[in-house]
Length: 248
Image 1: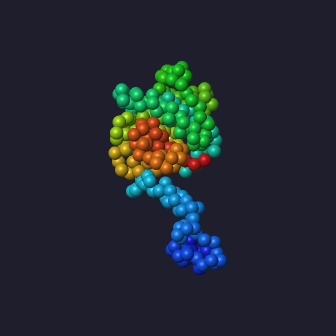
Image 2: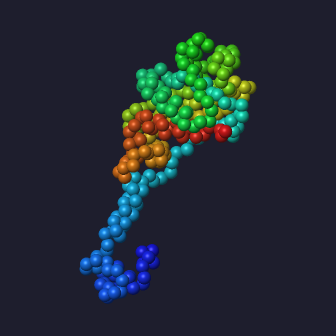
Image 3: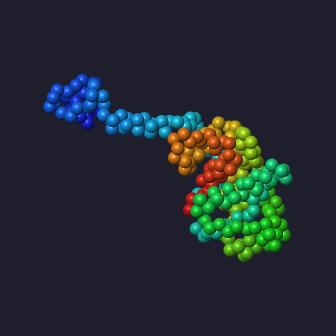
């Protein structure tokens, strides 16, 4: 490509051969390439290094334990009541995970913009239903959905449960999410998946997520850092799960 930018007689000059007087512009002393061309070459080399400095090789991970009642959300589903995050077991590690990751859950839900979010606090839930938290594994009281719809104006309810949380390497997080509308076939969408950074496919997908979401322009930014941050790893896992929601 470079030779096409100049007359044929200039090819010799690229090799350092002096040009005869009056034959055209000189390259400089001793046939050296001009500074702008050298800088351009370095620039191109730098671009290549930027793309190749943090390669992620191998297959990624796709959530498999996903249920969707229909490919699209109901047209009348506009507002979703989001219940407080629960934990699958009464363990200190999961309790710590709930406190750390509930804000992450809200941030990722806000990104998808599929429906309006209506938060339900533990105090509200206690007042309306007699308990501050409910999971889909619980036996729900009669009229549960009707009460929530009446009080919050919601069209459906999102249950969220943290089933696994490991804040040291290799990181792990397990989410159980269910979108329920209280109809005879109540579950619109559900996912139940654990993401373990010790699985090479999960690690690959987490790093690719980090590369796409990376705001740091430095060429040496390293996607491996997502595998050392419980918060960012949880962001990746939630992003992968919420991407399986029915379309609007």
